[in-house]
Image (cartoon, rainbow, N blue to C red; front, side, top):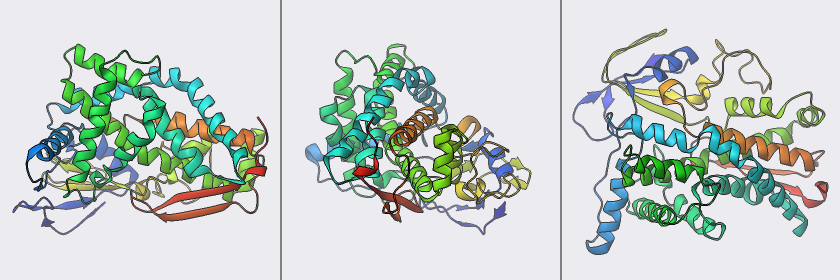
Length: 386
């Protein structure tokens, strides 16, 4: 753990705030389970709207973002986190299993319609999108346009530029779409919407709080799970012996998924916490008032925790990675992410005996930081019939 020199708070506060990078696994774990480690509060920039209806929409979006479980006031975060966890809990995900498998198979079946298939654009992206939208009860015909609106919220990613009004417009539009769904009987698999709407009916959340968590789930899922699935498929394409081991059962898909999550993407991003009180860690004491930086790529490659930390070794022994955070800060979407990634890999594995030599992988700097696989193109003839 390496303390950095004091710096000015990026919010613009005149107070000097220290920054501390917790890059060891042990220190990061100690931070994540500590109640004094708080998610930094949301900050709302000054927005020029021109007044009128546009102003009302932007204010609506800004208000809903303030209600996200990320960075909301401490006294309401537990209720919002609990509702988000219930929305994507094991019960909802188990009910979704058959749909996930069927959708993945249908997406790969489309490979016959063209000379080649991009497993990112034509398979991973719609698989990730449809999984959560099915859980929220979004009609298939509305998913592509809603996904575009969710994409408009990208500047809200930590480190992004959210000073424009566009992401607030997008957030308000997404929330309205979800509210319209909730005004009608929910489809059978809409477990996430059922849980959030149920929290409102039970008096645990206000309607706006529930809508805010739904928009946050859509926003968070749209980047991280896609990055993880595309990244893992590309690793398999580059390691044919590993792919063969998965096909013959020597290596399980679950082991592939966990090692893929450890090395990332999307674990090249960093988490941020604020120390409300002194936090004791194996590497030292983090003073109260410090902004804590948790670089997941370094934490999950800590040689003190993982042997040969940069090597992709499914089934390795040792502690569980922190790709989903830990303790009180565990990601509520971990069950959905694991289910989607596992289903995606299993489906490709069943149809693609070998990665052909002319498979093309394109990586670019990702929106979450670090490289992301933006294209993974395979000749359609390489896929075997179902």
